[in-house]
Image (cartoon, rainbow, N blue to C red; front, side):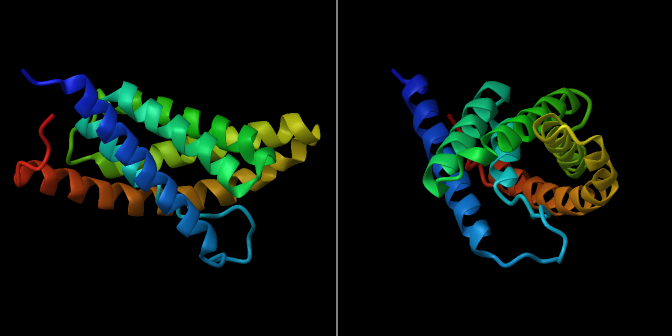
Length: 171
């Protein structure tokens, strides 16, 4: 008798740990551009893997764990609103798009998610600062989000293919 609930929980915990480690390592990488707020978002690779291999509930649990623990570990609770809003909006869009995009189009799902992550962060910035002009920063963030989203999406797409090809993914 298989206990898939325990296996699934262990895999979720493993994925959340890997996403958190990637997030913390990425914080140590110097900014790639002089423009603040632009990151690769490499932890999103893990979120995409969980979404396409396990489903939206697991991806949501992993995303929430990564965001909450990431804010606690870094001691940056001020960024919680930005990360939570951007991350949840990103995931919501990717969950919707997954219904229309197959495993050969994960790159597109990822790029769209990155765009909406940036939109979520701009919304929080406007609410927190009461400065609507922050929206002028959105085109720069969207352009960088598309590039980062494509990179993480292509990586995720290749990982999903390899994991399925080698029958690595069985719960």
